[in-house]
Image (cartoon, rainbow, N blue to C red; front, side, top):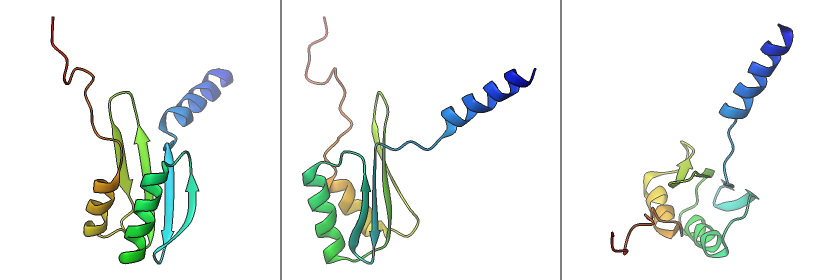
Length: 102
């Protein structure tokens, strides 16, 4: 019985653990930390935005089979969020786009 409980807890931890593909942390307009494989164009774009409009906060990128999602901390202003979305290289593309259906 104890093993079942431990197994259930382990499964819950694996399912609900926060696992972003990339993480960027900014403090007062400077990039302090990155995790994951950040594309160089996106990294340079984010640094440029932070240099022009200094902000503090965190950006996480999540990816699943169908979409890529940006999640911002509460400290990031709305104008900066939009600019980072514009620089982000991954778009929501559908594999069927541009193909003829048989």
